[in-house]
Image 1: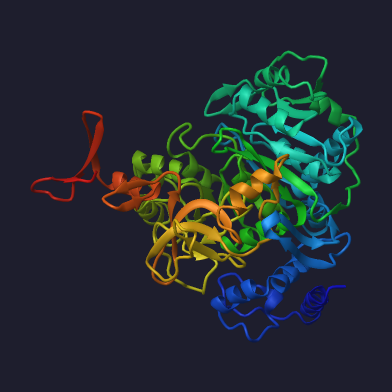
Image 2: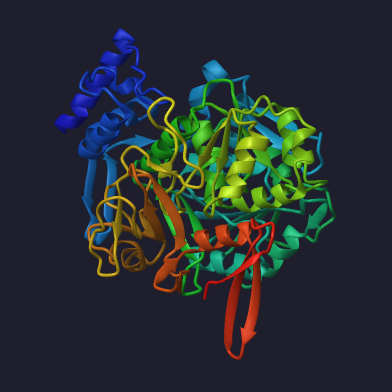
Length: 586
């Protein structure tokens, strides 16, 4: 047995026996490292995580996941070949970690709050009820011929049935591929074809923002182009009368004949949990594949420590399950931690721009995690939509997606959070699995700088490189953002095209993971994301990313003047009350 695994097992055993109190060196304590007296600060712990990744992640894996068989080695990697293996020899099941292990102590606790499209019609699902739903769907899939490793396309609205179907796939070892239920039939077909899907799970219709979305109609059009599909399960979301063909199976009827008990399959750590398609620069979507143990550990750890989640709190990630944010922070991260998590079916402006804030008051959410796009939209709707509701239950204000500009950050902090909630501006990608850079965790009480994610998470080492692929050192510098460490949550491959995975993420900067984003490292080592490296404008010798341009445009009035074939942009300085000054930028 690997000596580091023995060491980690001994440390966790000692922790359980002696109930050591974790010292408060970081915003959310890690009891797993309370015995290491040399760790006296947050920076010490971060340095330890980089210099001793096997010990750091090994201890957490033994402590925070439930194993059928414990792993024999923590990490084996040949990065240049894209061979990345964590927790080898270990066996576990994601659905057991997200549901079963909570039943003894949290069976009657809320697992899901389904915020349906119409305000005030929310539904609640306990861990016990979720367990029964997962068991029935798992039996339906297994008895219909879905086998370990089989791909299941999920094209469903944001609802408990969606979460249960994903966990049911995980229970029997099938690989789920969730497709955002707003995508066209053509987009759905391309993903089904690429993954060679045999099973599709959909609904009669979806509902969003008061509008009906014809999901079954889109699936029919897609399946007509996909001869690999053998069966389509149809969930009744609205009860609409939709055409049912020979491949179509009513899901509720199939579930009614199945037991709520389904024995979970014990799976290897590196077996694939899911694949999720993200747009590729060539136009062909990439099926990003994540493995079970590493992904589950990473999203559970980042969920707990980035948001300082405490037992009994209600976490409100409003992202759709069709995106990685929904996977990681509406499902797997919260449920692995035994949390209560939100499923938001509607729109931020339905029936009015106060929807989020009314929901926070009604459901008493303690955390909200949303996108800068919706935040800017709500900012422009005005403060009155926020001020009419009691948001005192909120403790953290999360943000994910494109970089958050300063004005939106200030409004989020001052108006929504009333200057008392941490703004957690996070940076990560589908490929990273979970949050990589964020203001928290940090030293207790550490300053949060507006408009930037700031601090790398434990086990994450940001590296900036220039156009010659040479590392850029020091502070107040910028370059292409790469990651110079290995972390358990990173994607393992692109389905069916591992060479593309290597060429996209590992080959551009040998020895590093290439993110495709640009970043600025400020004084104190804080990171600000400047946008995609392929979305850069050269202005009088300065490379401006999308984040910088958006911030400039948000703060100013922009005049565009076409001079022949040249488009010239002028910024009007609205701060000059006497005479607005025109500044020609490019």
